[in-house]
Length: 79
Image (cartoon, rainbow, N blue to C red; front, side, top):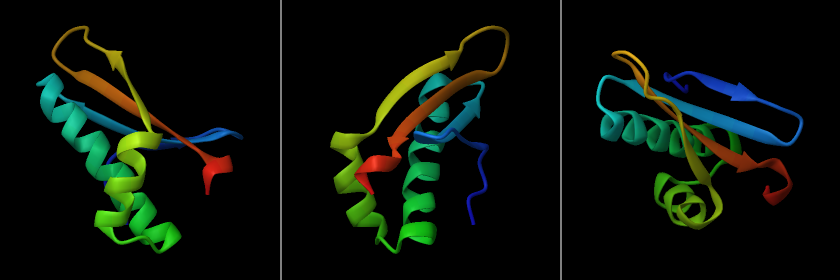
C-alpha cells in the first residue's frame, strides 16, 4: 500500500513526496514510486528502482513556507 500522497492523470501516475526538507521530500517521492510499482505491477523494489531511475522525471512542486514538495511522472504507456 502506498502511504505517501499519490495522483493520477490519463497519461501518468504521480508519486508525491512532502517534507520540510527538500531532500527528504525527494526520498519520499522515490520510495512511493518504487512501492507503487512493486504493489501494483509486480515489480521487485530493485526492478522498480532500476527501471524508473532512467524513466521517471521528478520536479519540485513547491518550496514555499515550511513544506517542500516533489513529484514524479511515471508514464503509463511504458507499462
